[in-house]
Length: 103
Image 1 (cartoon, helix red, strand yellow):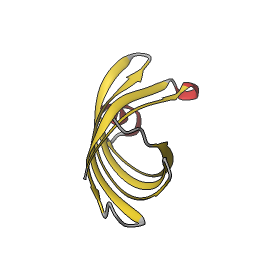
Image 2 (tube, one colour; image 1 turned 90 degrees about the horizontal axis):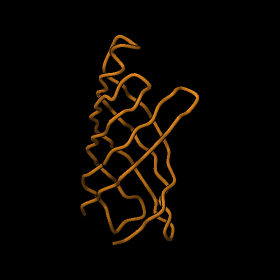
Image 3 (spheres, helix red, strand yellow; image 1 turned 60 degrees about the horizontal axis):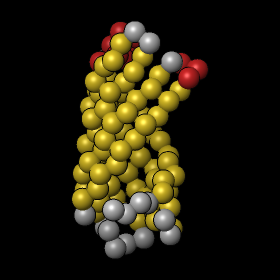
């Protein structure tokens, strides 16, 4: 099944905001544990710059009613990271809780 997600995140303590879209496929749609594979494109807003970010997200999730519980592994290319950390690549493990809105 196709999936698209729009997101916005902010972290005032480090002057960071990001907005973007995740789009891709959801495998095992009719099973208890579903497997998303998504591409991400976003922009990162810092006080002195607006920079692009590209990523790939793989994970596992369980749907309970309208809620989604996710565990993800994300790999990203972020042009602002090279300035701060000496590399443009970022890898992270994250967990999320989401709400399903069907259109």
